[in-house]
Amino acid sequence: MDSKKFEKVSRALSDPSRIVILEKFKKKKDCLYCAEIHDMLDLAQPSISHHLKQLVDADLLLPEKEGRNLKYTLNESVLNDYIAFLSALKS
Image (cartoon, rainbow, N blue to C red; front, side, top):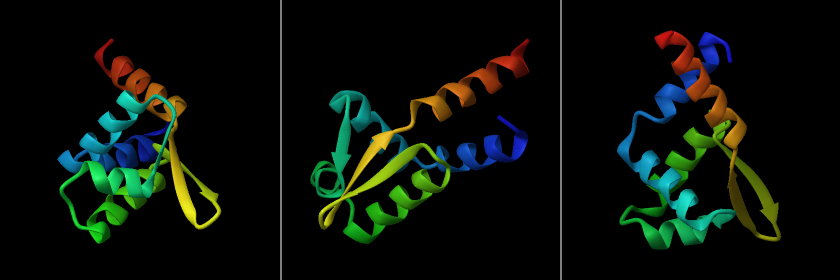
């Protein structure tokens, strides 16, 4: 992971609502639909869309169109690369 990618992921992770969204993926284990995320959080739909876009732009979530709905999966490889980058800073 290069420093620009690291910065983009860091910005995406800087918002508490986005962390909550990522925690929902940990509990669900596979994918979440936009409507499911909306039902889990006490946020307006435009706010959720904004947070999802930030996570997608940082490649932390992978969107997939399924009919009229979007489903999101966690991109664990980017998260693992991010953690590895942080670990390399420590060494």
